Length: 427
Ligand SMILES: *Cc1c(COP(=O)(O)O)cnc(C)c1O
Image 1 (cartoon, rainbow, N blue to C red):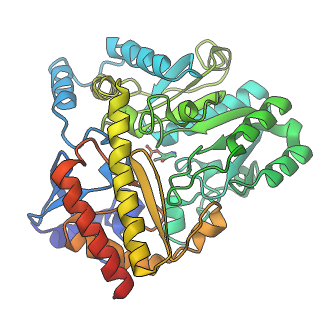
Image 2 (cartoon, rainbow, N blue to C red):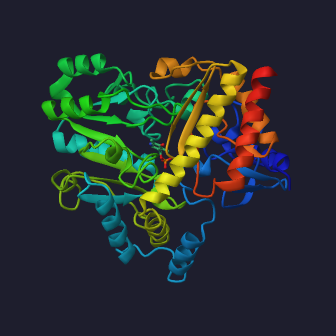
């Protein structure tokens, strides 16, 4: 059955035809393709096409699709059963791997998604501090948590719907929204509300409003202000954890948040989230402490096997260096093509993550993100798709590479992206 036929049927029985909104192609136009299988850097669609995938399941597939080691680990776990409802050995191995990799994390708890990880970290921060208010940054996405679906970027931004219906005003009111990369506003909010602030939650490198990098000193300032005010600093490293470095952005920036949230890469393609931090804080969780958090499928044996296999393949610095080299090649190629065309294009890249903002040369704040030319991006997206390259179907998402995006595959993709840029700009 073709993607078009599948989508027609899907729309009858699934809201919008998709189980996660950005998949619906609303912001680039057209209808989504369906994937039947995936391998290495490629997606194989229901229409018989092979596409080079720069979405990598929105981050998790750092080893490419259908990685043989992860598949073997899941198959081995599967032969022992799918879920036990008791502790299983791989939960211990996973927790030790995370604690070993991330210096700020002394204890960690597994859950089933990045949303859950952030929701639980936030509850824990409130329980630990006895305070209610939280600072988040406009454009940062922390999953579809009620009190964090405020100025949340990503899918909500794509749909031109910055706040979700169904979130009680009283919940949203506990969230203080500051502009990212603007030290003065965070200082002012702390000056006014300091003793009420349980936590500052931040994507240290925001990746859900395109890919944005911090101004020098911005993350360090968050560390200082939270410490001074008895608030916790939460790094949402669901996207960046184990992707930019084993220790995530906190390793790259040499900072220690109090709590961190993980997801995506940590699950090797199965539904896994995790949150962790200082033992003193984590011990406030039930059953040791008063903050309740639980999950029927948390620490699931198949998910732990996949996650453990994924993390085991990320022990060498060279893996990250190779990913960064591929990322740099793409970023430089796009910048060179834009220069040639005399077209303003702002390309941000770090390691295996990159994004391009169309029609603008500098993007450091969320206001600057919103100025990007989304129509031109949509033209670029479709030109690339025609050439067999799948980019995230939104101007406000980040592109991801895997260890398979190298050699001739990368060469061909770079040529296709350069041609697509030319077509999008020249028409
Ligand atoms: C994807 C993402 C989430 C949500 O994770 P889910 O697994 O989709 O619930 C949270 N925070 C960040 C930074 C993300 O990129």
